[in-house]
Length: 525
Image 1 (tube, rainbow, N blue to C red):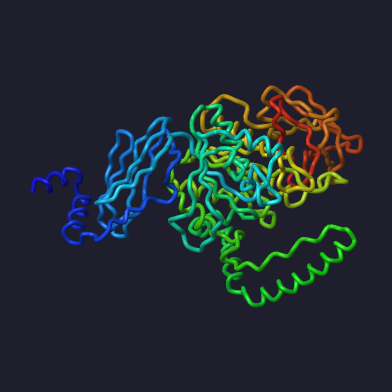
Image 2: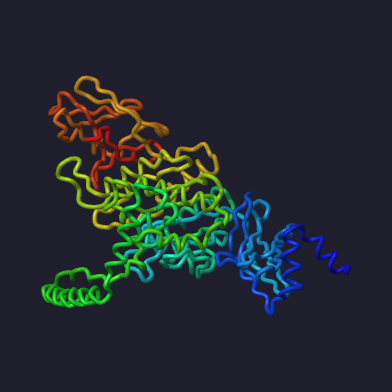
């Protein structure tokens, strides 16, 4: 009786009832404690914030978590799920964390408290520091960067590529310590960001990397969130139709025909010493297609919820060129969806505006889908606690995966230091604010001036101006104080200006901190 009384002192109310029911009515044959797969040795937990620890066990089984001076207990519900919220702990380590059940104990070693960031998107976030086994990966100075990547307090949990129509609870990965042996296959953008944050704040940094090449934003959004948006219903409807229409046999036959044709073309190209054409892609069931709505949220994001994080980094957009007209709505839905799932309030959401890519324009303002996505990304700055890093100047005309991920990481870190860590620093390049017409000139005003406007080139290029006919011509531009004056001898009555309004534009306008201005237009033609 005394032992029961002692046990009862640890529980109250429903927890006590559940525990006694489990012990006296249906004692388990074998304990089944299983922490969520995101927990493991070498993990980094978010400092200075409530930290959820969760998993599964036998129904009704009491589960105790011990960490530092904390010991908290919960009882697994009827479905075997349990969750314990640890009180906030400041940066430090290494610690151990123990999870204890009836007759089972699991301990995680080398655990640190630090800064945790979720890093997601498509191939430019997935792109690794080293080339390794993927030809398009590898950064500038790859060998040097890998050799110098000795940062044992930077750790990464890299979620494997998966798709699912149902939300998953588990994933299959482990925490890795950053070293010359592991840094090569870490996300380059995430790693360079973590390196900056670690060096500036002197705290451990954990990266939850969930990125998939060629994925769309809607693939990373939950079905419930998309269903709630009337103007995005077409995404789900199109997906349903694709699933209904998919014929694996017909798709395989078509692929085999394309493959045979490709082999003939490749042989002919090789005989002429020419580059072989791109190999056709194997058929993909819509359910396993990273373009399909919800499938990556279900398989790659959901298993991470609600792991405590400081914020999110996002680098994506190329695959949403077909839906550029509603891309800002998709992203607004995704951000709201993630913030609701994590239940941490409006955590910082930092995203990269697409880099330059394509052929330099012969005439001004010939921007296509990439330009339209950039404009949509600019609109998302209206969402609270977001920041956009501009990468227009690091693009490569013939490479959609620019090698300079060091500046991407640096600019992400500046935005994080300003939004998440409240440092009073310049974190953005100039953003267009307003215009006024003065005779045959247009005067442009900007915010995020930093130390002032500068041109990286002798001539301030990339500007175009239009008159009442709405036809744009290249313009003359000069900096006067905090403004840019734009005109053209061809336009006597200017009405609008555009800057860097092409897929691969001339980029010249910066602030003195070396951050480029975002492309913009003053019109809505």
